[in-house]
Length: 302
Image (cartoon, rainbow, N blue to C red; front, side, top):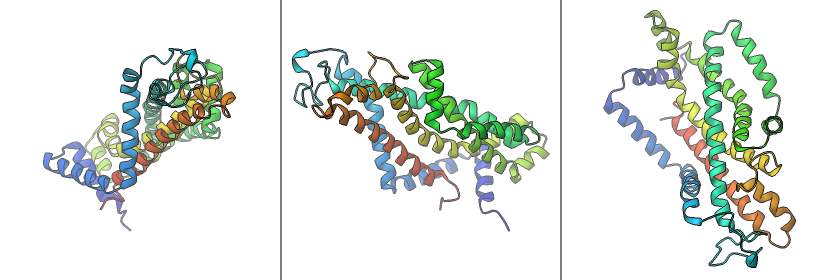
C-alpha cells in the first residue's frame, strides 16, 4: 500500500532543491489562506503579537520599574497608574512590561538553544541508526523520565540564580523532547525515494541532511518551537517564583507573584495582573502552535 504522505514529501523536497518562484508563492498563498480561516490561530497570533510588542515597546513607554512612591503603596488602578502600584509604590504596568522582556528572552533563547543542540543529535540517531541510535535514545529516555519543570528546577539550583542560568536550565530540559522529534522525522525521511535517489547520485551525508532532511523537518520544528516557548515562559516564572530565576531588582512575572502572596486579601490585583500576563502569553503561543500544526502539516493540507 502506498504511503499517502510520500508524494507530498517528495514534492516539498523538490521545491527545497530548486523551487520555482511561482510555485513557492502559490504554496505560501495557500498556507496563508488556510491560516486565516482558523479563528483560534488568528487569536493566538494577536496574543503573541501583543506579547512581543509589550516586551519590546512596553519598557520604552512605561518608565522606570524601580521608581518608588511610598505615598501610593498598594494603590488600585488609576489614571496615574493604570494597573496600580505594589507594596513599594512601584508601577505594576511598568514592572509587567519589563517582566515581559525577561519572559520573552527566556522562552525564545532557551527554545532556540534546545533546537540548536537537539536537532543535530536527533538527526544523527535517526539517519545513521546502527549502534549510535540505541545509545543516544537510551540516554534520552532517561532524561525524558524527569518532568520538564523538575528537571529545570534541579539544574537551576545547581547552576545558580540568574537569567543566563535560567535559559541554560530550560534549554537542557527541552533537549530530550527535541531529540525524539528530530529522530522520528529523520527515520521517516531517510526511507523516502528522494533521499534514496540522492544517495544513489553520490551525495554526501552532510548534503543529504542539509538539503533534504532538514528542509522537510522545518514545519515540525516550527510547530515544536511555538509549543515549547510557552512551557519555557511558565518555567521561567516558576523558577523566579521559587527564587531560582531572575533576582531583584530585575522585574519578573514570577517574582511579582512571590511578592504578591502576602497581599492577596489587601491588594489581589498584584497577583491577578502578572498571572493574567502569563496565562495570555502561553495561551497565545499554544493557539498559534496548534494553528501552524494544522496549516503546515502536508498530510492535513488539502
